[in-house]
Image (cartoon, rainbow, N blue to C red; front, top):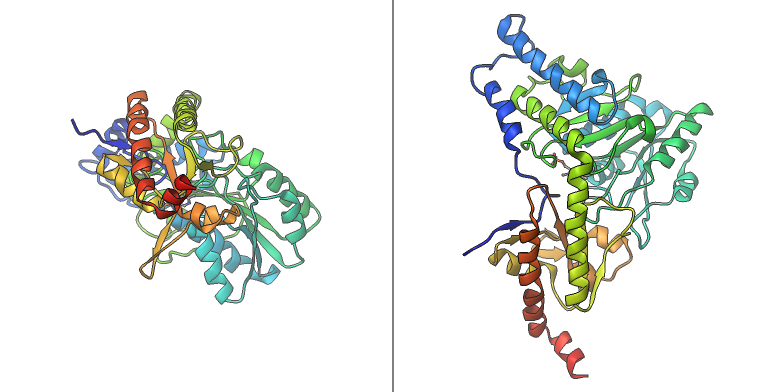
Length: 396
Ligand SMILES: *Cc1c(COP(=O)(O)O)cnc(C)c1O
């Protein structure tokens, strides 16, 4: 019997049945435009505002501070570009980390071409930025710090509360500086409270949280000025023009409500699955390393590098046996680039190329993990047999 095990929940998650149930009427009879004045419009508006409440609640924000977007990528674009454009008179320096998602990294790189200066902070072997480094990087003209809440490849949690404190202290001293955090991977996996973090903006995405792709949100603290990136409509308090996708927004609201209610229970279960997985690997496979700090990390991600194994080959080998995982490698101009996140941990090319991310989700069972633990050691052994370096090691 062919089994399929999905261990790529950091890439996307299956849509929850309850979420589907909540959004369906808004694809059929409740089809109104939330900006229309008549009954159909009001029905849609009420649904959007209910969802805004649900989204605000999972991060302890006010509903008016939530701007719906098409996803995490757009939320990051709106946060960074929007803030820089609205506040460039105060400075053009941005501080970020070397392990941000491409939706932060590439926006920063693009802004560099437009006259901004960006400091990309190191994360050391544990995959965590140092507050001291941030302090030292702040300049007269620094207007934005964008550091993710938790990393999507290795799961490491960044000291966002300390960064928030630092930024608040700078503000109290009269400095114009803002703090954005990409929390796409962290929402629903750990308690997120924008008051505790003290951030000005926070990005979210629905499809990492058992809702459909194509919807997300940006939290924008009251009083923070942003230059809209989507112009041509007055929706979302003129921060994001375009007719709201009511079914998607309703789905995101429902997903946030469910995630909030089940946070501890789900994550305890995921963590147990993950820890069992890691422990068994430790007992059965040699020559591997964990990537990133094992304490300060999200409960659902395990990132490992197997020596003498190409991550991409292992991914394909596992896929043939029904197991879906991912590598952080990106195909660029025909060759496989090792993951910049793993490289930022100071690992060499071989270890970076051998990195594999297993990301667990609420639908995974103990049997799923058992199956993976059955096929993974064999897959690695087979690949190592093909590796000339590994054969040498065995002979020597
Ligand atoms: C998935 C992801 C994004 C992008 O979100 P989309 O909704 O897919 O555009 C951004 N940041 C992180 C950390 C992510 O994991």
